[in-house]
Amino acid sequence: MKDEAKEMKDEVKDDLQRKSDQKEKDDQKTKDEIQSLRTRIQQPESSDLTMQQDTIKQNQKNEKIEENMKHLIHKTEDLENRSRRDNLRIIGLPEDPDKRKSLDIILQEVIKENCPDILEQEGKVEIDRIHRSPPVLNPQLTTPSNVIAKFKNYHTKEKVLQAAKKKSFRYQGTTVRITQDLAASTLKKRKAWNMIFRKARGLGLQPRINYPVKLIILLQGEVWAFNKIRELQEFVKKRPDLNRKFDIQAQNSRESSKVAVLADILLSAMKHKMTCQVKAYQVHRQKRQELEEHLRERFGVGKRCQKAADSKVFHMKLQ
Image 1 (cartoon, rainbow, N blue to C red):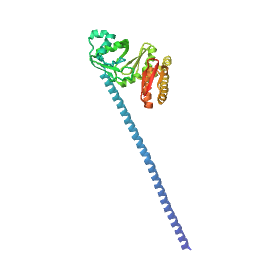
Image 2 (image 1 turned 60 degrees about the horizontal axis):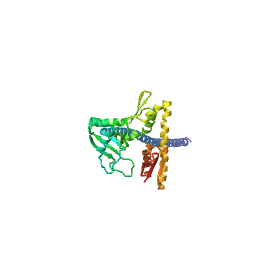
Image 3 (image 1 turned 90 degrees about the horizontal axis):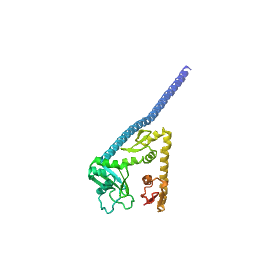
């Protein structure tokens, strides 16, 4: 009996030991699997963290590159403007298809007609070179191309420019405008001030644009300068009476919507091979270039914008 009891006890003990060993093995296997899963989970997290760090570094590099590019573009634009410091741009000077007179002679006549005192002081105004831009006469355009004149003497050029700022120049009965010649990018930035400039002039704020694109106004005996439209917007917001008069955002919105609507009308006309005549109240004359750019960007179509004989009508030809 004792032997049987001992044998049963040993069997139970062995069975329990086997089960215990198996449980330990199962537990270890489970632990290994859990550890494996943790490792697999941590790897993507580590990879994601590395990718995020790389993205941050790349964004910082891109920002630095953009900064450098802006700086280089600004320097290039400034250098181009400085290279044009001796130049004047003459706008609206009638073209002579037969070229009976050289542009040099015509410019001398313009100066003689409008500021003869300069010729009396300087004698003949010496011009280094003068040309039209673009140089080839386009018979389809109703307005003459601009004339670029490079003076040999900077001070003489400044005298002519200051005289042109004081009064309107005329040549053989035609009004011509004389301005400082600037880089195309600078001219584009200055045009952004056009509507605000006209409004400021109407309010008697004596606006002027200083080099390169700074708006100067005189308000209540104080001179204020603005490098960007946003700065002017913040300025007028703090002055309710001025804010109501300017209403910059509303005017910009109205003009932009006019341009967009007009572009749709013109595109529809183009599809039906029609020629459009658009009354001036639909879009301001100064917005013609913006309209052309809008059409180019939106539809990629060729077009030509003409001012008709009637100043209140635009003749828009879509080719």
